[in-house]
Length: 121
Image (cartoon, rainbow, N blue to C red; front, side):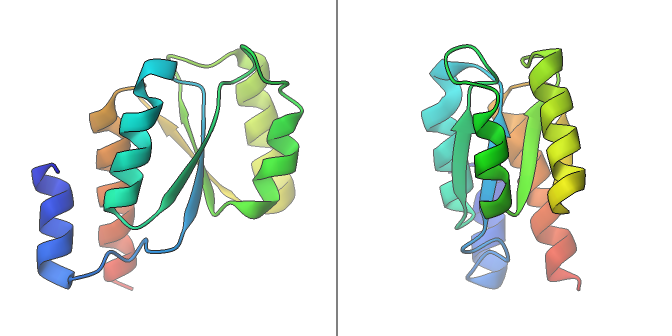
């Protein structure tokens, strides 16, 4: 558990992201288990779509209605998949969060920021 995730749990006992579901499109397959664990540390579920490498890009449209927000690492996603995500997020009213890269720390920073914003509401 990282310092950011630990601080979230120590200060509030529970994360404001408990029970939320996120879609992560793109990234590196070898990171998926780690990314899911990071989301789980915040009490959230992470659904992964590979961005069209093996899974059909059209599957993104079937997953979007069931998630709270979508993360896309802009360095590890096809243009087609990214465009599909942006369009789908507008259509279904979902938050789209581009990530600078596909690193674990990039997702953790985004979740920490989201958790802090939700805590201040």
